[in-house]
Length: 427
Image (cartoon, rainbow, N blue to C red):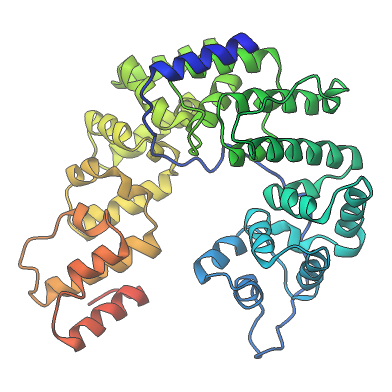
């Protein structure tokens, strides 16, 4: 393993790293150890229906956007239980900032039983000698270890995180020994800790290391195959030092797929018109690209061909935005027909800007396109439809500046803002 680390370091010294732009939201598949409440109550403060997002805004000062994001991951119908969790954390001297970090990273803690689950775990860690400052720091880094069901797992992960946090405070890199007492028993946990030590020595950031520690992904629990897969990923030029998930995604794919399966997938793409170089270039941008079975790939191309794309246009679309392979046929049809049939952009415009297929219909496509419809009906854009890029491939602020706030007429601006925020179709 030490030779592998040395190999990786030398490789990185010779490479000029480039950062890969993509997001993977299915690489680390974690299960919540807690169940959520199911009764329906009303928040009596103002007579409105209680919502998770409103609770997070009112109790923790979260922004509406962050609160809405968190509310999609956890559910509770009154503030009794989450209030008890927050009270417990404050009793143990977690700061408001630390509590906000914990809730953001691991919102499921709000539905844990404060008295029967969380309090005993905090007391257990303190009984082992954890100081208040150490306890709050470590658990703020990796709050998900509070979901551990056994004291042995809790203490092992806690000690490991503590070792990394303390070692990384030094200005000089400090190695962690795999011969530590943490690895006294042969198990998946032992393999996981050993593998994470290797990834740390290759420069993987703390946040990704800790995510892997508390995840259930298979590759991080492997042994011989982990080393083999890691070597392949390093040789392909993936960078373990970045905060993106490209390295983790590639490692996961190469661990999960046999050489025979990988070869078969590459051959499928070749038959569709991709070169071998194309396949591996796309893999570097979107590793899950190799995870699609032949049937999924065939179904995807059939959907695009039915919509009027040529085979070459399908290939170009995937090269530019491989994530479109993961979209359901229903979504691809709905979005393409809206853009081409209802708005009037040619298919070539979609091929040139395939990332628009990843846009939300309700939050981006429809509101912006309704503004464009209104402007065209008033003769303010001329007879030619603006480019799909200028309408859909920009931030909300840039769109509003370009198509709404540029006008001096206050009534017109107010009307356009109403269309933009209301999502209603202009007539």
